[in-house]
Image (cartoon, rainbow, N blue to C red; front, side, top):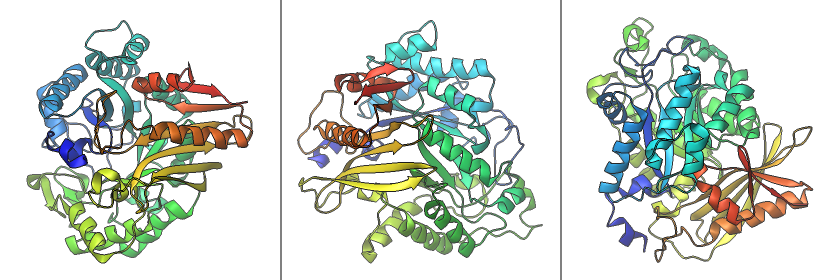
Length: 457
């Protein structure tokens, strides 16, 4: 059973969603637009992070060397009992697409070199090696800004092997953006959302309730907007209530502008209201930025508030559609495997999204697929995500009672192909992590960089 597997793994929640995340941090660099009012980034650490963040502390100790960071984390994860053959590489620490081009290519190549255990001549060779390596990069996430998602920049992220992009949206309001020195507009968010989805990326928004210029009522109205309007509708969220952190412009000015961050009670209430508004197709990755207490000037200090919020929701008996609370890995009860496939359709950024999910009688989620259909000159059918939930297993490994490696992915893929074929699309595209290409090849797909493609008609 799921519990038996978790006994052998320290901190099983780290890999309970089906992949093993591995975070690398970029060298310090100021963002082109300057500094957002809440950003604590200093001279010696990447912007928006502190020198007490675990990932940044590791990176500092290793001179921000990407190869050494990956190598170090692989050793630690192995020692903790986590499988490391299916890695999601997460690139943190500022706006990566604003760094020098040579640095960007070097950084990603060295990450692949470390996973491969050998040095390649160039990035393309490193990716090719990784397709069958012992530590495969099955997904890659890049943190970015809405105003750094031009066609050229998107092409570059695809070349790196990225499959997921997170952008800082905070709250979609131009007046708030002005007050917080965000440096972009709501229209930039709308454009980035469309461009990233059309390219096949899974898209995450960083949301920040409690900013200067907002209030609880306004925050909920703006939060509703991101799901009510087809201009937005992200696949995932990080909910980071605004905090006053040392070395940020807000730490120097909050008394002057009479700013007060939300109390713990206010924060819990607003997070519960937000959770109730989230549709089935969206996952909350995190709640609360984990700033250490010694770095806090004013605001929340309770880092595990998510646990309290979710517990209160469960006790209340209110239905929550959000993905993470429904995942098989987070539900030890109601695990009957009378599985069914459900399809949810919704409009998004001038396209049609099909959210396919495999659930049991109790609504527990075992796997999902995101299919995007667009029309026009560059219209196509694109699978933006295929994900099977449950404790991560090694490639080819099977464990009784665990949802991975049971043919659920193939079931979802066949249904997506059926939908695309019925809608008269000649081909279907998949944005594939480098290390998952072999899987798609076995399903009849061929590499046509940067996508895996299969003819349907």
